[in-house]
Length: 501
Image (cartoon, rainbow, N blue to C red; front, side):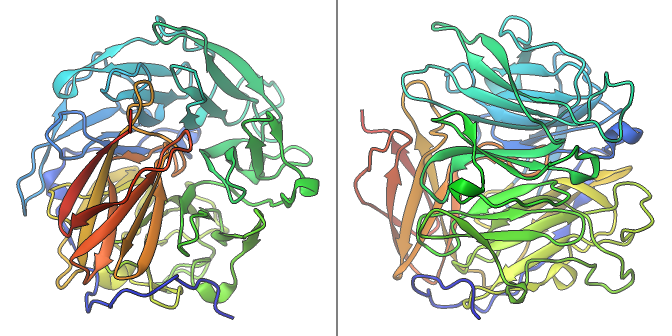
């Protein structure tokens, strides 16, 4: 049975995805360290220089956190190392977020040990504001992050996910730490007070977003390898401040939860959810009644074993992201793959997935033919238009192997549109908004979120492939529910939309 049925179909393009390995354009960088860095290795993409090109920050593990400034020209990718206020090691990942509402992105740095927050300044400059903003300095192992704004609160609420309890003398196996909610308590400047969110089941990814019910919720994906009794995936309702149960239509799902990707694949303005894991990668299809059902195996997204067939053991999925890499108006899926370290039951030769969505809603593997079938132990990734040519490129962080960079050189790709939002005075990047775009009768939508992935995320203008269409109509549902007017935009353009004050 066909699982996904788009609302309408744009005219197909004849493009086959193709990427060029341009890793020499990066400074050498690896995600290193012992068992405390088996997980993590996040990568985030955002514009900290203000030139419109995505910069990056890459976790280093026992190696230093790396800030990569984009110095690309059209058709040529290039990055240089940029200076941070201090050398930061023991990092698992980092997330960009405008915490102090000044219109400049800050960075929350996750660590094995006390986390740090770097306040953004001009041209990729940063300062350490960890203590002045009240960020807890506990000896915890942070592995996931997300954030959201609530009505009439100037600064975001941040959710911090922790892995095993480092203080438990019986650990690490069989122990999971509680998670932390950081509530803003300052009115004129950000300051945070921690609250325990339990139970915790070794969170490896978090995402705050509107769920299938249309309600703001905190989704937590957990690593069952360390589960205590009763551990499972979690959904926490933000308004009522409680975890949902089977009575709420939230089924018990247990997997080796590692990464989260979310995107509306059907045009119904409800986001499907992709959960990466050891073995099956689970796609959950949003239903009209606000619940989710598991996608059928014929959809092509389970990606449970390596497709190169050199190693038949189960795959290990980490960062996942939905992105239209050929701009045909059908959203594709990238999954970073790689063994935890030397787990003999799992594949060691485990290439990254590039799953291309067809007009029938099914996904077909193209990682090998597209040139991204790397078998290093991949962890974090970023899919972004690094050179501004309208095609989404790819960067990948690897454990104990050099970071990779791939330029998208797909020929005969479709047209595209980007949408940049400027939100209200406090939520400047409009986290929680949904952008709805229609081109040639095909409706697509994306939420603006920060979180998900695995230990990193992109915060950039939203990218939409529109096939052969020459224009599109755009509408924004802002975080407070305000529905903006219809705006037309031509192909190959970036549309800037401000919150209607």
